[in-house]
Image 1: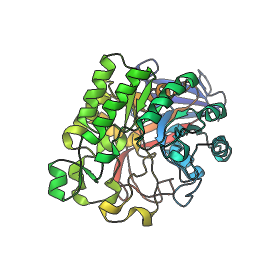
Image 2: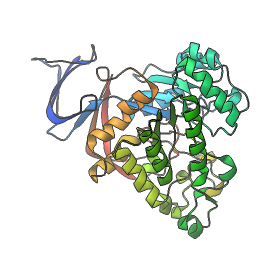
Image 3: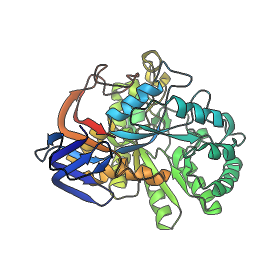
Length: 406
């Protein structure tokens, strides 16, 4: 059925700022909008279904290679497509890490043809150890989309040399601002960490590292994207840096937009993240930063764990959870509450990541059909990910991707 007519759907297109109910024709073979008098399939939207360009995830972790029991490339691709993603960006923290062109080739060769394009990021340092630079030139030749270590870099001289060198390669750089010497806890410092008896991490663990990285951007002139912002003070620093003309951008994970530290009262290990969840005022600042454009993108930060690995006492559990199938329904909660516009929500999941990674537009190559009113239970049967490590397991969420057309 190559010709589809979407009748009276809400078309969201952040490429040209469109948000209106309309009829939309789509040719699945040519992957383009079309006008057909005899469509093979008609989908009635009744003004309720939402259709928009395919989504791009800015960073996600794969279990394969190394930990296929957590997630395979096939299950990752299936989860991404079920979440409306036609691109998923793979972090280099696999086993072995993507610090060698052979690993780039492996990921591309073994990523399944499910209509989801893998975008591979290469390591900044050898073995992600932060001690010596990886062969970033060879990685660039192998076709990585950009560079990150997916962990805080503490070797500031190495980082300075890298930022000087990568300007020649003209590839995006993604950095996680965190001063590890201050980050020896499991929750953000504040009244909730004290009340719950959880070891606290001060806001300065993020902001001190962010300030130093901003100084290195000033020194080198190299554009940098900051990953996993989680505090109100970080949003302020980013806003000031952008106002001064520094070539920087930033992202937040869906977890830090939706959850905050009071929820740690459950001691659910699936709510342990690194950086930790913000306090309520941090969550408000992050949402406002997304809404006003200070924060450029929202990432899944999809991190699969096995049941045995994740279900430990809170302070012992590894950080992170899965999210690819939940991002769009969860951010739509903020749309329904009037805190983020529908168009902005779609933008930070599509054009925002594209611009950060300097990828070609997907405006004419993929479509997502989303029902914001569909309620479904998150469980082993409904999830495509091999991992079930999410605080939403067994709960009902509203909003579901019905189909991804690639």
